[in-house]
Length: 292
Image (tube, rainbow, N blue to C red; front, side, top):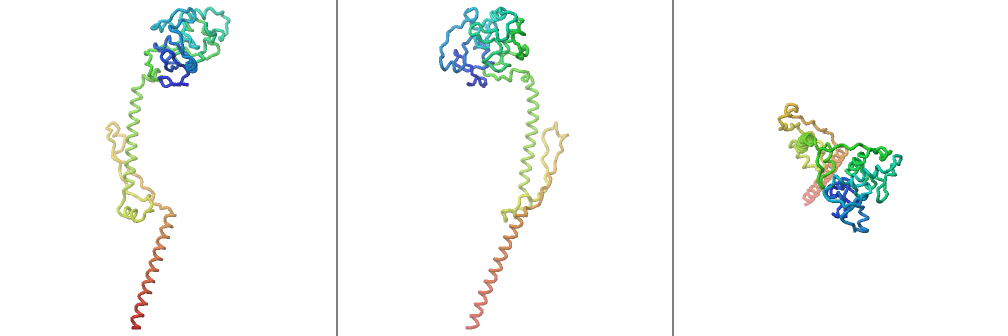
């Protein structure tokens, strides 16, 4: 598998331009009569005959006659009029698989090298088949949607496939909705930033305790703060100018409380021991003075 210019995975390769092509790009004017096969075939043997010939009447195909030629599912190119006459030459009771290419005897429908049933190759081939009036015999049990006439020019080779559909005509409305969503996201981010900023603030007592005791819980109560009002005048009537921040819970982790009690008990024990040692030293000094 290779990647086309429109970033679609494909196995087709243009021998003339030496580029991968997909089911959309294969119908562009620059590839209309090109020799196109699979990429593996090009790796094995990249030689080709030029100029190409119609696979039925063997006439030389000329560039710029894209409306007069049709590419079959087997990738051979044929005049559209030749394809119509070729299909009509089959008996009326012919099975769908019996309508084959005049060169390689591959079924005309469905195209075997392009799996995307909504590609431009499928659409153009269906349009020519429907000119014969035998589309029911040719399509058989394969689900086929009737081609819809396009009112837009085909996109360039670098264009993306989703831009062809009707979604491209609603880009303005989608952009407006996207802009509103971005504004809402902006204010939500601003509120989140303010919440984090004001969470770090607190009274002087809390700051002193946090600097004195490293394991002091961060879940201390803080003063309620208000969020700055939005600057959008169109939504100023719907949104209140300030919003009180709910107070956070002042509960401390019981494990931290027990650790604090243990540390305080150790400090008290050390203080008592130090006091006893000092008293003992003073008593010995006083005894020596009395003996003297």
